[in-house]
Image (cartoon, rainbow, N blue to C red):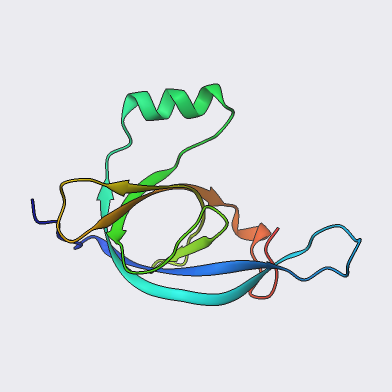
Length: 118
C-alpha cells in the first residue's frame, strides 16, 4: 500500500537538558531533526481508552515517512504553530514508504518558549 502525506507539514526538534549538573532539569529546544509532510490518522477507540487508563491524553496521531531517528523525547510543531509532545513512535507495517505513526499530546502554548520547553 502506498502512503501519501498530504495533510500538512511538521517540524520535529530534539529536547535538551540545559540545567547545571545536579539541578532540576530544564528542557530547551535543541537541534531540528527535520521538516516532514504528514498524514492525519484516526485515533482509535482502543488506543484512546488505553491511554486514558494510563492518565495520558492523546490529541492526535500523524503518520510521517521513516527518514530520521525520532523518539518519544522529541517535540513537534505543526505549520499552524501548535506544539506537541511525541508520546509514542510506532513503525507501520505494509506501507510504502516506510512510515512512523506518532502519538501526540498538545503542549499548552504558555508552556512553550522559543528557548525553553517545560
